[in-house]
Length: 423
Ligand code: AMP
Ligand code: GLY
Image (cartoon, rainbow, N blue to C red; front, side):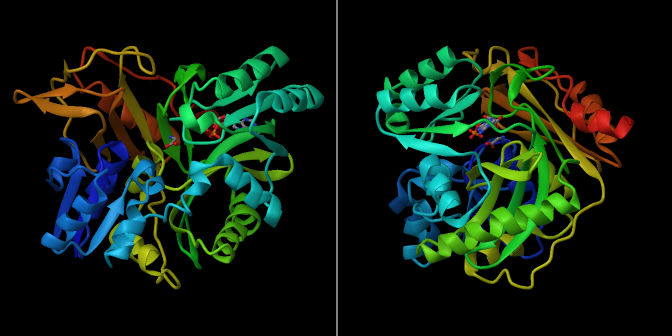
């Protein structure tokens, strides 16, 4: 099978690394790619926003299958254009990608099918939103409806914060993403991410993970795209997985099919495990970054036929095997991230892969023959071990092998699971 992978982050490096191990693969191409992905795939100079150019490339190179990593091309309809050209593609249609692209869309789906989630209202203007916030009281959560690069959510502990967040959305701080606002009840509990493949009818549960969104140790400081992750998440017990499948994922799949927009691709459910059980915070319609990196380390099965089955409606009867071990990844980021940071800082030595460790590239590039950091999140130092504590020790030991002066990282990735393992 000839495969084109779309994306350039650590998630896509992990996907490329795993796809490259498939006996079914005959050639792997990637666009835009990065230097890590280039070790696994042929990088092609393709403008991924130019959907016609992507189709042309696929035709010219006889690509059998396209795997889309990030959400933006999906929300922009790349999967629709490829499907219309009879090219198999992993990832949902633009209509189904609304599960990530519009928080209001997902909340309405939850309401229609009785999927557990925080009570909510949608607003197109500030005054009624503020009146609702005053009526509900705090804590309360204010969300820009659309894609806001992870910055459109305010968990407000005070009324002033909540009212300011409403104003911020409607002031245009998030562009058109903030033209509509969802005001949502605060959910108390422990967060977990849960991943499943769907071909539109059948769902195959993958695994759970936990991310670390805040930039600083002890979950302090501003939100980021994710500073580290581990899998599995101990809070996702067999019972919670079963309830999540029955109460959240299955009704979503049948609801989307009923609406005429069956969901194919990967569900990334952001969950809050509350006293009542699992409740949906949000859906993403692609793998998490850096959650994907730990899932790929733990996956024993060949990934490629699973993705292809999800894309072609043939997931029924497929099975998936996992290594029993836990995996953990530490994100190394440019000093200053998630604020402004210096670009093109040199990265010296990188530790080579071992049987239990692997460094995935995110925001890196080769400039004048040297590896440099070009992004906020730059490297994902990933390890596998018998327990989360072991994977953590192995990942941090590997971090010491990275020489990059402008890099920083959290020192406590995995703390919740490590604390549980101690007791
Ligand atoms: P989202 O972009 O929807 O994932 O929201 C970002 C973060 O805000 C989540 O990971 C949670 O930590 C928090 N959050 C979102 N919605 C809620 C909610 N209803 N209750 C409590 N925390 C929330
Ligand atoms: N790590 C969170 C995300 O990929 O959205």
